[in-house]
Image 1 (cartoon, helix red, strand yellow):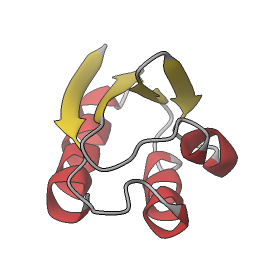
Image 2: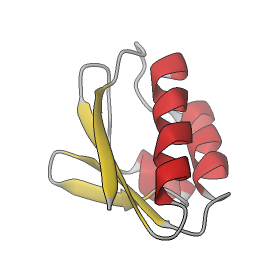
Image 3: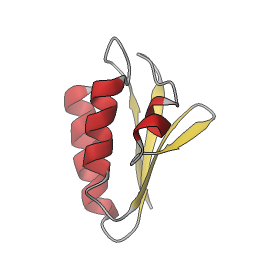
Length: 85
């Protein structure tokens, strides 16, 4: 299992547009990918699940990947978070 943590810097947090991009990106991988914020954990391949964690600006999220392509998935997701959120 690979994971990373990130503090959301986008002033609106993870809203519909970035959540949709995150889901589309995560869905490209066969690994199980989750995103956690506080006590809530979501399947990163499901839009309403991702939006349901309530990640706002300043929230710390943890993204985890477990599976055959976890290294590539974590690298691409980390790039997305650092460039967009």
